[in-house]
Length: 411
Image 1 (cartoon, rainbow, N blue to C red):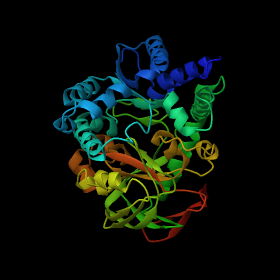
Image 2 (spheres, rainbow, N blue to C red):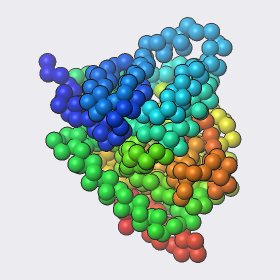
Image 3 (cartoon, one colour):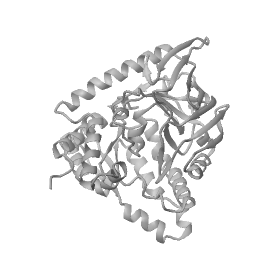
Image 4 (tube, rainbow, N blue to C red):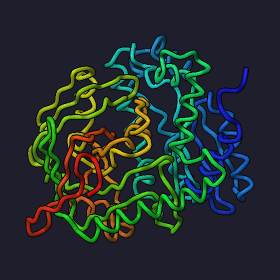
């Protein structure tokens, strides 16, 4: 039977990951994390990395079976532990100039049948242990990117009515199309796409809105923007001056909200797949930047545990604009993966902000980020609030209302 994953397009994805996603520099080391099922992509990325002059490529692999063994056999106290030594080592590697690449994949619902208390505790322990490495990433202290592997278990979830072979092929083709590697000019297509996203960001920077106002079914939300915020899109420059694309794919233009200036209520327009749980029909209410009421039709217990991670988990760290006409939205697929689903709709993120989303952010310390309204947390979780029924207005510093999106389309 023909391989469900086109090897030519897979090779293009690896090339785009190295040349566009990372913009890997000669002599630069690479830390690569991936599910073990993604080894075919890991090997191709390593090949392209070394061709680009990489120093040392270090893969760190995870396995669904090993993960489940912990939940089925580990002692209770094991769920309050995390491999801090590993994440500290990754942070040290980034401090020495290593790039970071993550391959998303695996079964999104792997932990759906496990004890939610253990899942929550394990996630919290990992989030806390990972904070030092996450800090380097959110500050863009190094170049980093995320790409996706069409894992068979993931494919079965996305297309349950198809055979495993056909489901994996369908998911692979969707990933390749969204990642703009389904023809020979993948790198050139990314250059053009980044240019268009950059024009959107430049217009928003020129407007210098004080806030965004969202209205639509179940939504009347005002998101104040951080003082001196800056809009980022597509390619992003690291503190060291390397231009990288953090997400492959990406359709968003995003910035930092003010953690104290969010008010109103909002309803999710797509389910959130989080650590093996599908959280559906999220509805929250904000007062003075903080979520004071939260509900979900399904997975509410997990949502509440997320919100209780730390004080910053109930506040916003990102606001992103994505047109309803994005290729991922038009595919009509629910990917059960935030890397893709967040690029189908405008979204917000609970938790940690990006210091790069400030004018002069490259020289700001954490105290200055906080003074300008940036949020701090051990988590960063995106969820979708945009659709073809949502309108967005920008509110100027003088209170003037400027249309930004109508029914999910850029005005």
